Length: 457
Ligand SMILES: *Cc1c(COP(=O)(O)O)cnc(C)c1O
Image 1 (cartoon, rainbow, N blue to C red):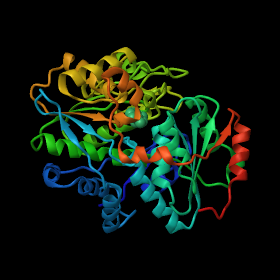
Image 2 (image 1 turned 135 degrees about the vertical axis):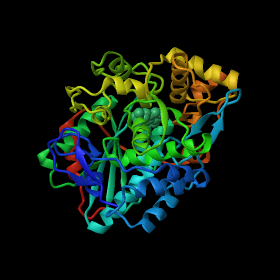
Image 3 (image 1 turned 90 degrees about the vertical axis):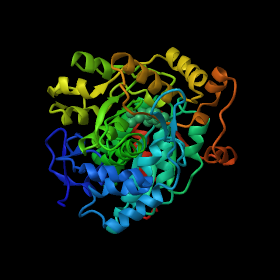
């Protein structure tokens, strides 16, 4: 097997291997890394997944990328260590072969644990081998920060700095970031998520910070996407017969999770449709409809807060895979094959009102407990069914967070509070510690420099 090389979607950076792409995050030309060609599975390799546990499928999928990066034995060990929790596939009552996959059993109760835990183990290993120190900056609207902080907590040679908008995260989300300590620092920013993201982006481009090795754990990093392809193979192996195409629904914001499904398809998984419902931030369904792209600025504040993204960075990758080119500002320099995009993807926008109605309806009709992100997904799946019947195909919808992350909303709609998993319940008793900054880039830079201790670990 040859080593996989990755190129930038902007086309003006040298090709790198996976190790370099993981360490850098974004390409120097501000593009995003993509493999030049995706490794392929033979149908019989995919058929064999039916009897394998999750961590074994993860190993098979990721080992296609690991040649020359990591010995197979070590990768296998990392997968077992990262994926030591359940991945429940809940068959939906009253429907035939339609399942909800609950990606909420990791330590921070969102799907982001899947990628963050794998990425932390890989980057931790590379950092140890190189003797280099690394600072990971992450801007978060809630779930990314907590998943990344938890995954990198106590990883030697790495410090993590999380920026979150002070008024836009729930108390539980905040505690997931502010109670870890040691190599994890969090900063409450008196601003919006967009402000946090802009400060992080400026830091990456700032010559005054050149002496600090910075990396990103946002889904611009290809290391966030490859592990997210694994659960599609897993779901298909449990729901369908070998070779049978599946309908996959991924409630989307920055479209990193969707890229996992696209990558699985590129690697040979038969997929009938990838359904990507969004909340009121509807730039992608409009793009699929018209072929013209316009970002939404500032992003709209919706109930499914982790999907409040008005300019999804991973769209540049999707456009590239379909033969086009989009830069980081959203300008399209070469149009993708829109007919192929529309054949493979379906997207609709779901209002907050419909999100709430769906939480109620799914519970009443199917005894299916959803939180707002999953409810956007479920409603969008039905929008798809109205356009194209399943005709007996298996289907899976990804529930991306644990309902206990949204106790008030669910109590209001359903009259009970969801049971809190132990990982979240433990937080209530821990002491918090975080810094606080205004939307002030210079202050943030000073903070980064002052707290940069070369010997930190
Ligand atoms: C991050 C997140 C999403 C959106 O995922 P993208 O990869 O940004 O599309 C959806 N649901 C939850 C709960 C999230 O935390």
